[in-house]
Length: 264
Length: 268
Ligand SMILES: Nc1ncnc2c1ncn2[C@@H]1O[C@H](COP(=O)(O)OP(=O)(O)O)[C@@H](O)[C@H]1O
Ligand SMILES: [Mg+2]
Image (cartoon, rainbow over all chains, first blue to last red):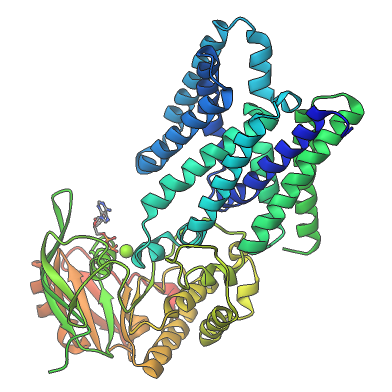
């Protein structure tokens, strides 16, 4: 299987995505913001489709639109919370805009499927450099803010009293979620970002790991999902996204089972 | 005279043009245990936020140990009013540990020294065992103990406790108050303890800071909890009733209990 360059590329890309999704997802679940990855990947879809229409890489369009809307969400957080109808409308509008852009694209059907459900075997070796740079930058940035972010996530009032800038952390973190969603969508597609970002992290939290080990475990589980999905896709000739989504559910269900047995 | 632990001078706090605290002045001597009393919306939380420098007063000022307040560099431990715990799956230990130097950039990694400090804070409130459990599996009172441990980290000289008795059953109220009182006495802390019911604090507090209609009155229980003093503060006739050694503040005529909403279930 590793004789093919596209398989080697896919395994490296999956590693990079898991490396980012594990820790970012851990904070996402801890903060009860898992919807944010879902929302940002929808907006990212419109950005990616627009980028394709302009002849730019989808990753660029996805990343830019997801980061900008993530930061916007952070700035407007007070005004966004509880506006579920408005959020739903914005997301639908984003998906609609994406559909419109794809409509004008000649090879639209293939592009739409790739964006929505991922096309990990179609990742070019040269874009690996981009993915690697994003992964390192994103994880390094998260490492820098993770201590105050943890404090702010667990006890916002106390953190504020101790001089932590909650708003700034919110904006920075959601920008990182935007980057992580963009990377993840390369592997799983827009619609399945949730499975690689949230399922491993939720499982790790459910198992009762602390912050440092929890992020590590989330990374390992994400890697098992992503690599396992690729391997199964190779064996069965079914899309990797399907297997990744299935493994995501299995990982989460098993973690729940283990936690239940332990009486947590 | 000793520098007051907390001094408010003509302090006014408003939200969108609505005054919550209106030119409030008081001085709290170091080491005292003060009950901050007032009904819902009287401004207890707003006062605490002003003391921590989290809100900019519309007018006036607050001095903590003689210094103007500044965000995040105060010798103040804060226990916020109970609310829904967002991150329920993490263990209590990690929740408390996150507060230790939680402001510093970097990874949330705990040195052996930091671990020992967290353990010591948990021991002080007798919550070492509790802390192993996920926060969501803890009762309200157990969470309060963790929050108290968290407030004691970094060795504050002043504790601001926002309604630590909310969500406790009456039997636990005295116990919790005693625990806080003993801790504070051992360490010589100044404590501001907000509550809408004064009774569980009877015998512990040195003074009462009573908030009503944006005004504040600081004094001993015997000076503040009297019909004339509180009528003047409310600007309307209220009556302080003593029954079975308990205090109630009743709006005159209406038969409305303004606070001390402890009723029949309060028989000990
Ligand atoms: N951030 C805020 N914005 C607008 N109004 C507020 C805010 N915080 C508190 N208030 C209002 O100020 C008043 C006092 O609130 P608070 O200090 O929380 O009272 P307490 O803690 O005594 O119940 C209440 O009427 C409340 O609605
Ligand atoms: Mg309050």
